[in-house]
Length: 303
Image (cartoon, rainbow, N blue to C red; front, side, top):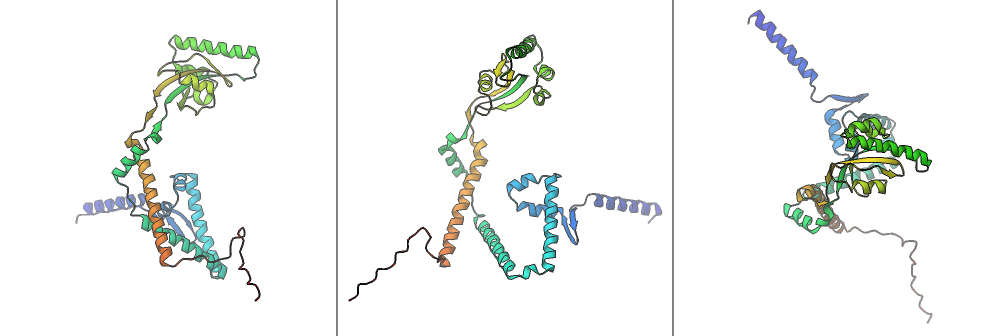
């Protein structure tokens, strides 16, 4: 092999080694003593958690770091406990046995209910039977320009706010851009930076009856007169209107499937529990509840 080719081959090897190091397929996420948590370990442990925990422990979030920290702490504290013999104490062994039993029982039921299936026919039948439950209320995507004035403000203060609102409305009618005027004049700074956009509004979901009534009286693209509420004056614009409708089967399918699957799993679990309870002659033997009277047998009269 020529020297030039040897050098070239070595360079390629170094580059590949560097790439492999940079793209570690299972990187270390944390360590405590001899215990190491890698990405695969973390994902496996997280997969067993509730949906709420999974949602909170998102990628690179503070919650993710705290979750990893707690895993590491639990491991090193458990190691300390074992070194001190806590796991050999009778009362601790009993509690560990109970925890193990509960965990294994849960895993057994999960394995038994894994066979639960939901057919397309069942989904369609449920949808048709409960179609009234899939009503989607009307919505409006709204912008506003807000002029703040307290409900108990003096009449002249309210009049000044109304005058300012009327002036902005005149500019809108003259061809002014709503978003630009919202950024310039609105007292709602959170929405002003977004051109006055509030977002989607549904009936019954606002904190002002006057505002809600005015919103749903507007057609798409229309701008309101100044609306007086307990918060002040609002000029409203509806960018988009969606009328009340019934959700389609496609929109409802995932919800229905999950609901029916949960029902099927509960049914299987109950059947399994009842069967095992019967096979094992399960019986609860104990004293009568405190709120029940124990009726003693009457004594026979003396002969």
